[in-house]
Image 1 (cartoon, rainbow, N blue to C red):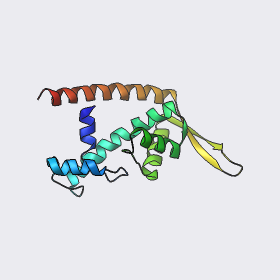
Image 2: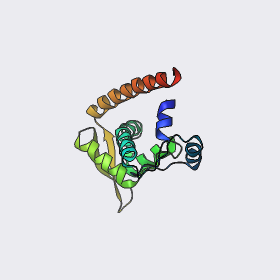
Image 3: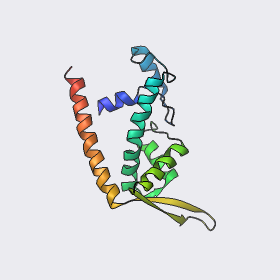
Length: 151
């Protein structure tokens, strides 16, 4: 898990997440990253990394807390201590992709006399995919940790 934290601390990615000031200071101090997000290679790498993690993280939150998109996003932000502060467009685009893939279902629920919210639920296919993604993440994280700690 340390490796993942180190990777995530590498940038202020453009698709909706923000970097904490302490992380930015640490990066400048250690000179781990000498470019900026304008460096297209780094930006592309980090966007791909984030895209590869957003959907499994959303699936995980939905598996525990079927709800509407805003609440799912806020729960992800809360659990990450503010690290994953995603824009609405990022969250809803990911939720639409998950729905198109048959991993989540949604339906409209009335929350007030004139308000409705689209709520998201995991499908059986979504549960199976989440199980596979979590297992793969554990293998990836463990292998990366081994590389870092055995250097």
